[in-house]
Length: 117
Length: 110
Image 1: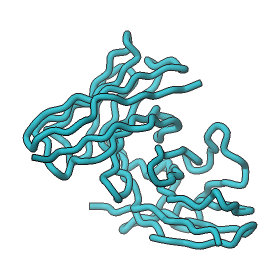
Image 2 (image 1 turned 135 degrees about the vertical axis):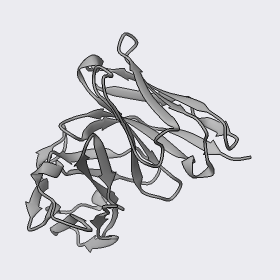
Image 3 (image 1 turned 120 degrees about the vertical axis):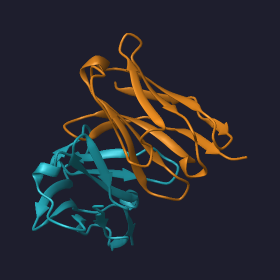
Image 4 (image 1 turned 120 degrees about the horizontal axis):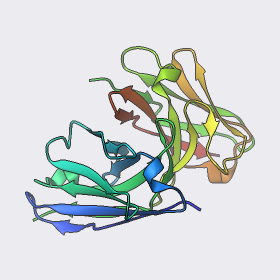
């Protein structure tokens, strides 16, 4: 069965960096695009970034463009999100999702990122 | 900037039918936006119900259905059950590899 397991969250100071990982199993990782989505405490879902199956194209929400970088290692079945210049408003649970026809059909359980001094 | 709109809250009686909608602040939603629907209970990961307008995700019962109604995407729940009480989010594909979520609808079953 499809499994997505996020890791790498934690507490970081404003202006700091963090790298999230998403370990995938149960499907042919290299055949699917992947998403990152986040949810601030008590708020709704926000799409963050998408990467095509071969890593050839990457897309970002305006709120993170220039600060976050999505990447993947198909040999390790792992998706990444490098987050730089973090701000308080980046505090959220970050979920990775497997792409399905311009959407996501499976999600991980999420990892919490807290940006605070 | 385009805003994706959803009803903030909705209520339905057990066994009843409810239709939640997903619109645009400017323009109409069509299948070209590949509307999708997610269910989420507090503290849990989202669960995909519907993608690409009307395709049910694996394991989702057929009492959940997606469609286009007028100028909006719609999620219809028939035979509502107590455990359908959740937050429901739609997301639209805006082109150029980007997506926008609606603000979510809090569904109460009572």
